[in-house]
Image 1: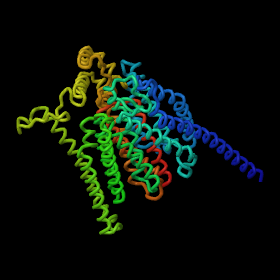
Image 2: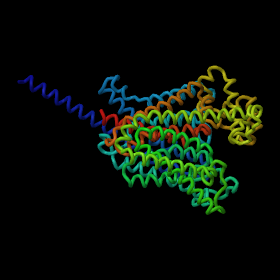
Image 3: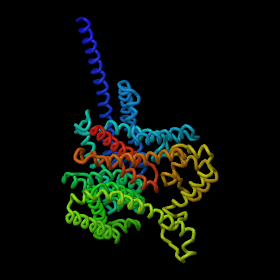
Length: 572
């Protein structure tokens, strides 16, 4: 009897100890979750609207905000997260918690690891740590972005019932204020293109420079980078929502997004939109209902473009003159053609469902799903190859020699001036890479060290100075080429792996989702993770990493990964 009593007391002691441990780590987790939520609130709502001396050194002010909030909030949250991880490791064997590492996690870790190695081997340690002044994308920022991904993916406060320790009010608040912050940013961008300046941002700036800056982000390319990266969230909520109220609200947000994209005056945004809609079409091939949603989204986009065109006609005395591609999509025939094409497709699909019966169409849809996706991918790749052949043949004079045709179009003649002088920049960057030592080709000059490295070589320093004087070239204006110089072949492959693994992870999760068992928010964010990566990659093929855009890529990926993990726990 005494032995039985002693055993019960030992079991109670162990149970009480476990409860105490759970209580301790649970509170640490809550604290990490609270700090992560605070940081997201500031970044998603305040950061886009924050500025200092109007457009003067706006990139520096943005980085100060990012760096300050990350140091004060994100770093302590990361320390608490490590404590939570140690607690998990104490309760489970290594093999069990390693199973929680996803493809997206591995991709981010590979990219962070490659950046660290490049920094260690760099001859420009200060530059590699801090980055170029104005956007500061050195190792410090890279590590903060990586930390934000892991914190958001593990500690975002979703609704009660979707995560044990979730705080519904906090999660909803963060999402709602994101739409408020980004929506106001979009509205300001649209107003600026009609000469309306409610914040007085253009005071003291020559009117000739107004086309180069807008909203509270700054440069047009920075602004379009930001819009393209975050716009996918609203688009996916409109696409996935079941509630009419949510669809109307997200639809209005999408209208603002489309309107500001067609007026921001950066051609890079249209490459981004092309990839975004390609990804959305592939996702929509899963069922006829999703294809209806895709066509509705495309119609909304074309109608928004045309609405801006009418406003430009109506307020022609105030509307700023935009580039050829923006005008083609807004005031030109292309938006009419897109609107007509997608409307016809939707009518045909609805009539086909009415004639055959919805149940019969859904049953037969599986035969068409793979074919539609294959046709889409082949079509996009064929268009890309055709454009490349046209550029190469036209630049080399092949088409003139064979057919007597020469294209003087700014897009088809690859000379130094091609793509706002990207032709010269890309050729110079390729030349620099070719002359790098084998070690530097593998690991680069250091994160965000394009400027430091290029101007350390007398030959290229003189070449760049003569072409760009009195300005200084700070990057290759192509993120992938820039990464090749900065973190080498290993770093570029790691970055591409991060993007590719993220797309695959989120696409497969979207395919496996169980209809009716997951919320609109979860479903939308899984898809937004894939589309945001595609949109970012398409845009930054002609742009570069900067603090106004790249941190949001990691934020959206973190949200998508968090949503996938919740779905996996529910289904298991």
